[in-house]
Image (cartoon, rainbow, N blue to C red; front, top):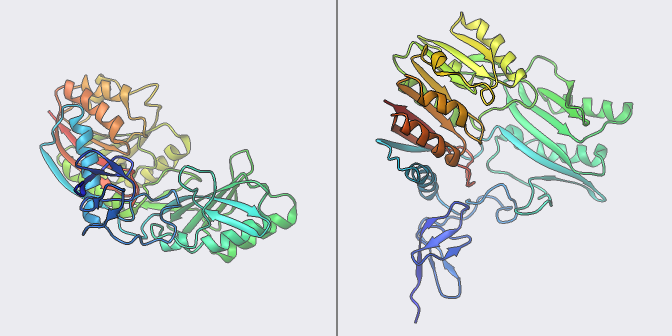
Amino acid sequence: MTLPDPIIRLAAKGDGVTASGRHVSGAVPGDVVDESGEVTPGEHHQTPPCRHFGVCGGCQLQHADDAVLANFVQGRVVFAARSQGLEPEELLPVHLSPPHSRRRAGLHGLRTARGAVLGYREGGSHRVVDLAECPVLHPALAALIAPLRRFVAAHGPKAMVGIDLTLADQGVEANLTHFPLEGLGPTEAALDFARDQGLARLTIDQGYGPETLWEPEPVTVTLSGVPVGLPPGAFLQATHDAETRMAADAAEWLAGARVVADLFAGLGTFAFALRADRKVLAVEAERAAHLACKAAGARTGGQVLALHRDLFRSPLMPEELNRFDAVLLDPPRAGARAQVAEIAASTLQRVVYVSCNPSSWARDAATLAQGGFRLTKLRGVGQFRWSTHVELVSLFER
């Protein structure tokens, strides 16, 4: 007789893993699995809050409670550190974004014979799940699902379209891609839609980049009390609460640093959070984001200065870095191999590294360690709730 096999952890892609090494889809720690593969739920196995779970590819872990989610996030970041022989001196509690907090969404729409479908893609498929609800989205974004479906049904092309939504200070920005508007009628319908739904901005990408069709007033996003112009399609942290948590960590960890460089600064998410009692140089390659940060920085009385520079091709060199008391970097998923090598060769004493990819972060962390840095603080961040996407904020010192 085979004894039940307990689930002891979650694998990187969300499967439950038993003590004997079996991977079981849909199981969480505390569940047990019998020889036939049947799962007996344990105390941490919850009823998924969304009717689309299991089909929609947006979430993988809605059947896990918050304790399991937090352990999953922490396990991923700690494993990444230990894979490079690093042990954080202080492991801080995980931050999990709550339901209904996501302020960015990338949806797909398709006109059909019966109307239209609109939602995320199915897991491992190009088919679109026709959303009736989405418990991760901010209510302002979720409220647009049904009106957007009707608009795609009436005016969309007979091909897949992209729909990117972002919550700004003035309301929701919507960007429709691969969405040609042929003639006056469809254009007027799009304007009517934007007005009736109270959109902050509507942009249409017909293959030549986003073109603004509706923007009653300049669209901004407030970053640490500073309104910053929001270019169409600009990067923004997925949830405001996670942004606030990471920015607060960075400000606390860089206390006493009078001159700081914010590398891969984007719109200035961290630069504006760090500006109190110090000067910050915000370095960014993407031109629209740089110009938005520069314009907002001009209103801070010289606390935030912006520099347009591609840090992948032209990283700040040690002689430049040595002018700063500390550095913060928040690179794309690929990490910052070239820039981190120069930081390791500098005389900097403190580095805050924010990452959306524990694997590339671990590689860069190993370079910092070789340069004499210690990983003194580490916090896992789960702002993509119920997904296997994990982020982190960390402090290195020497």
